[in-house]
Image (cartoon, rainbow, N blue to C red; front, side, top):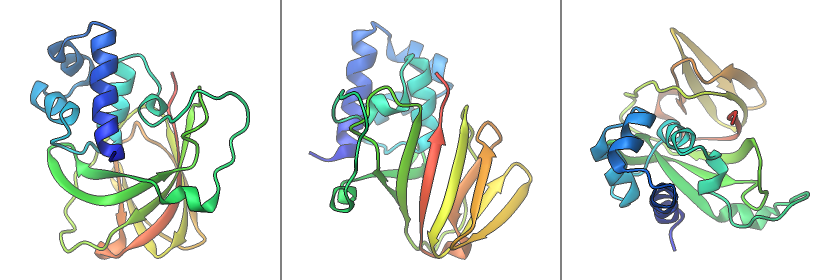
Amino acid sequence: MNNTKIVGEKIKSLRTAREISVQELAERSGLSEEQVIRIENNVDIPSLAPLIKIARALGARLGTFLDDQTALGAVVCRKQETNDTISFSNNAMDARTHMHYSSLSKSKADRHMEPFIVEIEKVNNTEYTLSSHEGEEFIYVLEGIIEIAHGKQKYVIEAGDTIYYDSIVPHHVHGFEGQAAKILAVVYTPI
């Protein structure tokens, strides 16, 4: 089964279990009812920011939608296990997928950090929309060059460079001038 589909189903299942209506989830998360329905039904692929807003509105960790197991203790993620990716678009109402996330911790329960290897595809359209969510992000560029729009600033980060920022500030991560890139990203979201 496709991980993106699993994410939508987990959101719907958790919302239903907590007896929260689509309307109430939309209000709590700041998304439209249409967006919530489209995400739950796997019509739209959410970006990370709306996914974090949904998690917070449901009183859950982001990892709840990505977890494979509920094992306690240390988790090792072998290189061959990172091939299982989750794709996000750059906008919840835009089905373009330009980033493919490989979770490095999906077997670790009750985590507050989400480490990913992210493959950023080459794109022709370099337009983007800033988004924000609570927490912090750390990025280490493995290959290529990325650009981070963070508030009114833009940062060009090359292979071997890192950036750490508050994600409550509107931001967007993308390949510099539409180029492909590969990054290690760690997203922290407070409960």
